[in-house]
Image (cartoon, rainbow, N blue to C red; front, top):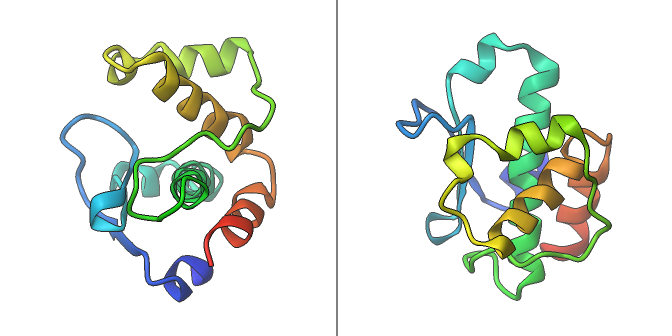
Length: 124
């Protein structure tokens, strides 16, 4: 959160109507975390925040933070848990490339330190 604030990225706790637990909205330079995540505990909050921070890094990698994210090209993980996350109806309308963006963020959101490293690498 300190680095997000240093970069002046808006971060908000609010209800997300779609049922998503977190969102990166590049055009508004804003990360939104749903209130429900607070009740899920610190570890889950960190994973959701890390997932969204990876999307921020993907936007920066694409050239500009307010641009739609672009896949960084990290090796993607394929697992039952990850596939279950991606099978949620929130992702049912997504293109193959957007699914790869999501898979990249899910793959690394629970690996300690990766999100902040990506943010520091690509967002100056």
